[in-house]
Length: 120
Image (cartoon, rainbow, N blue to C red):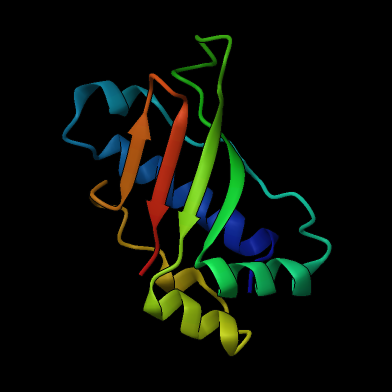
């Protein structure tokens, strides 16, 4: 299910993955929140995700201790087969978040202030 618990777990995993990144520049960034519009309309959000296999959000991704003035990133969450299956069954999505020991499931673009994450 797409709920606050899932978004908090994803936020934490993104932070750990960025800290473990092989890209030195990414190591300075971390995730301090994920905002999804209309999260209170869970069925509508779920229907949209099942149709598009993705979810648009805003991620709060500061550098260090908010060293840059613009820390809001456009976020695209891509749902893989496992995540879609869990969503259809209205189960928790936590296990669809990839391991945070590496960042190969995250694309962070510092120029366009965007982030894409690929769930399992």
